Image (spheres, rainbow, N blue to C red):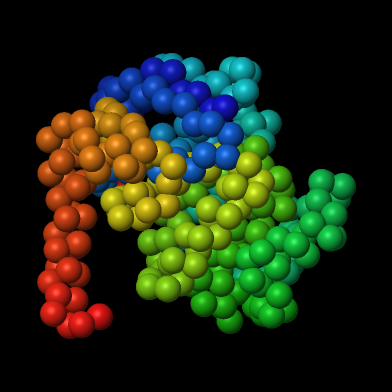
Length: 250
Ligand SMILES: Nc1ncnc2c1ncn2[C@@H]1O[C@H](COP(=O)(O)OP(=O)(O)OP(=O)(O)O)[C@@H](O)[C@H]1O
């Protein structure tokens, strides 16, 4: 279990995170949702170990990791821009991290992951020959072969659209379940957060506005911020789509 206890972060005397406490169970998908500048990426970087918090504790399976360096945490991130190597093909990108830790993942396990992510036909392609969704899947595979204890995803769907987005969402869910992999996802999109996650951590100005399941958030928003900034976006979308289909016979 991942547990954050009263995490605070200040930059040059300005408070960006003001006492964040929550926990995520093994295999759970948790989205960190909030408007631009609310502190989502800072929180993800604190969990990853890129940023050391000003205050508070980060505990994983009972071990205090607050001062443990990033490379010893066993966590792994897929960055928003995927950060793939353009001079290597898809397969070489996927196995790149294994070159120094050969026994971590067997060839058969790599093959299974490639299959799970539907990448069999794309392995020999150069990165610039791949679509956005294919790049995202290569980036996911490259991270998963390292067998992280915690998966962090920074806006994993923002560059994708339509059916590709839905297919990546389904794969992220399958991976979290199959590998019992706790997954933290940063997003600014309420629809994405509420349809992808087991729990959603809504942040407003560095504080938790609500931490709950999507159903709890929709049925009992904790405050005006959740009601007006998060839910109203969804109800407007729903009403527009409903109007479009109403009377069409579909
Ligand atoms: N290293 C830093 N030094 C100074 N200020 C920083 C630093 N990193 C982040 N900030 C500030 O902290 C605040 C929160 O930034 P953060 O990137 O965490 O927000 P965010 O919610 O991820 O925003 P976005 O959705 O736009 O990426 C912003 O005001 C940002 O300018």
